[in-house]
Amino acid sequence: MEHLDPDRLVLLALSEDSTEPDESMHLAVCPGCRSDFESLHHVATLAAEGPSLGEQSAAPDRIWQAIESEIAQLNRPVRVPDQPGDNRAFPPATRRRPRRLLAPVLAAAAAAVLAVAGTLAVTRTADRQPPDHVAAHATLSPLPEVPPAAHGSATVLTDGTIEIDTRDLPLTTGFHEVWLIDPADTTRMVALGNLSQDQDALLPVPPGVDLNRYRLVDVSDEPHDGDAAHSGHSLLRGTLTS
Amino acid sequence: MNSDDELAGQLRDGDEKALRAAYDLYGAAVLYLAQRLLGNRADAEDVTQLTFVAAWTGRDTFDPERGSMLGWLLGIARRKAVDRMRSAARSDRITETVRAQLPLAEPPETPDRIVDRLIVADELGRLPEDQRRTLQLAFFDDLTHPQIAAVTGLPLGTVKSHIRRGMANLRRRWEVDGGTSGSRSAGPSRAL
Image (cartoon, rainbow over all chains, first blue to last red; front, side, top):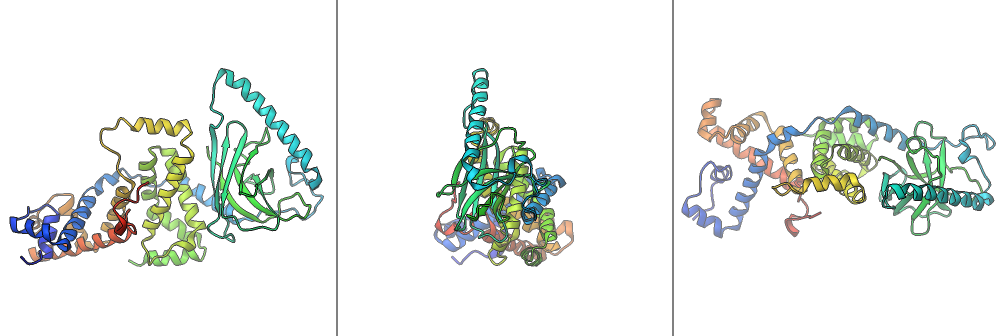
C-alpha cells in the first residue's frame, strides 16, 4: 500500500474517521506514516485540551511591580559614600571599621548567635521546630557585568543563620563577602561575613536585623585593601522571600 | 510572526519595555505552569517573578533561532519551580501542599505535557485566521470537516487544506518548542 495521504492522516489524527484495515496494517509497518500519525494525534489532543487553560489567570500587575523593582535594584550599583568619615549614610551595624576589628566583630556575632540559640532553645521546649526550618529564601542571580554562569542561593533558617551557596563566581584576588541590603536605600546594609574557598558559607544573621527591610542579599568582590565598606563591586543579588 | 525576534533584539539592548511586553504576552502562561507544578499560588507568583528577573539577567542567552520566547521562558520557569521545590522541601508549607496533592486519583500531569499544552495553545493563537477558525471548530466544537464546511460556507476542499496546514504548523511548533524538544531523539523523558 502507498503512504497515507496527508489529509487522510489529519482526519485519522483528529479521530474523525477510524482507520481501515489496510491503513492499520500500513501504519504498523511504515515508521514514517506512524510517526506522522502519532505526532499529529498528540498535537490534536493537546490542542483540544486548550480550553482548560482558561483556568489560567492573567498575571497580576503586582508581580510585574515586584519584577520591576528587583531589576531596578540589580541595575543600581551600591552607592559607596564619597566621604570615608561620613557615617550618617550607614546604620550602626555597618559603620566603617578597620579590618583588624574583624575578629572582635566576629566574636560579637558568634555571641549573638549563642544568644539567638539560647532563645530558640527556650522556645523549642514549648514548640519543637526542626533546626533547619526555612524562614526565607533568595535565588542569587549575576549582575549584568558578571559571567552569566555565576549563581547561587541564600536560605535563612529559623535558627538565626543564613546558608549561602554559590556556583561559578568569578575568580578574585580578594575575597567574597555577603551583605544584606535595604533595597529602599542601598547605602544601608549589614555585613554578614565572607564566603569560604568552596564558595559556600553558613553565616549568622545578627539579631535584631529586620529581614523585611534588609531583604536584598548581595555577594560582593572585596579587595584586600583594609577597607571594610562595600567595594561597590556586587557579583550576585537576590531578594529574600518567605 | 516576527515579534519574538524584535522582542529579543530589544531585550538584548537592555530595553525594559521588551520585558514588560514579554510579561504581558507570556506572564499568564508562566504563572499557570508554576501553579500547576507547585500547587500553591504564593510560590507560583514568586517563581513567576524569579523567572522574569532571570530572563532579564540572562537575556543574552535567548536565541530566537533555537525556539520561541515562550518556550525559553517556560524552560526557565520550570527550572525555577524545581529549585523552589527542592530548596523548600523542608518547609512545612510545601510538604503540606504536596501531601494535600497525594490523594488525587489521577496522576499529576507531567511538566512536559503542561509545557506542550501551553505551546500548542500559543501557536493556535498565532495561526492565520482561517486556519485557526477551522481548527477551533474541529477541536472545541467537535465538528467534522463537512460540518465545518456547512457552518463556514467554505468548500470542503478549502476546509481540508486549512486544517491540514494548521495542523502542520502546530506540529512544527510543538517539535521545536515542546517540553521534550531537544531530548526527543534521546528518549521521551527529560524527567525531573
